[in-house]
Length: 392
Image 1: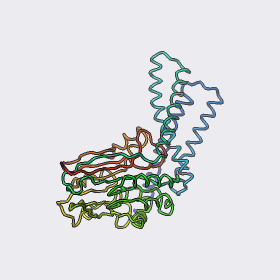
Image 2: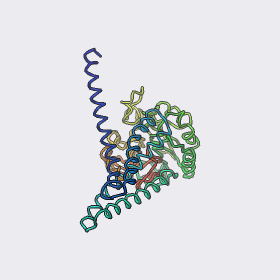
Image 3: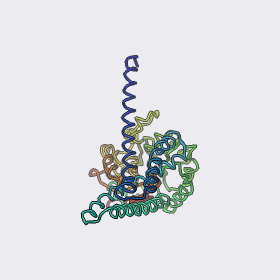
Image 4: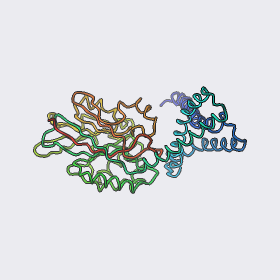
């Protein structure tokens, strides 16, 4: 970089930093301001001490939130992460239901209900609904995922492989909350399903291997009749991707780092391939990038292909390469309603089985764990049992 370029880069960085700061302040003001206006200000006419206490509480939490988020996720401080992530979940629910509460307030006003009764009804309902959803959402996030059973017909699948049982887990996100017991519970459920293949389609953890090894180590006890396979997700590229590839290999899993293996039964075979996450190329991790050609190199084009790829958006590559079935995660099914509307802007599918060409199907899991806020609201986690069938 020349001296002139360096001089020009500094103002650009300052402008980018200033824009980020403005956006951050605006988002925090909106997230915390709408619930404050609904619950504290509005037309509630609370006694002065209640108003002051509520205002101070919202102001302190809003000011501390970005600090804790930076300390937690920037400096790997698990305690700060737990507080910040939980705060984000709580304020998101309060924000959503405060917006809906304002709509209710308009209806009540049209019905002739005056303040402060109108605003206090809205505040009470917002608090009650939010509390119920947060307790339920926390319970859903912390429980061992339910099994979701899906039958998939693959016309090119040989009859010797009819009934092949594939268990899919994804987005375990081992993180600041120690979920070692949860991890062991997930493994017990997987093994109870007597799978032929177990697949993990990435976002294994938020943190590097030494930080999360107690939560991830139960994966070594997973049993599968034919193969245990794993691919990286986007979060691996913030958490030491190569370390996770090597660790999963040390547990006996096949890390499908742009490669494949072949499983066979009763004279019929299936190619099981995997590609790196689509963010890998920009991560700076040497040798990591999404490469369908490398993953399928040397394969028999007459054989059906099961592809592991973290994001549903990677389905375009699967269609172009004649994949029969892609398994993905990433979306979490939205995790906290109505966040799924934002997810759908970026991804072609939110969850479930979908068809994308005459040959190519995609199964998108809602995820087995959770990211960030320890809540799942109207988006339950899953351990997926996919039974593959030959065409009758």
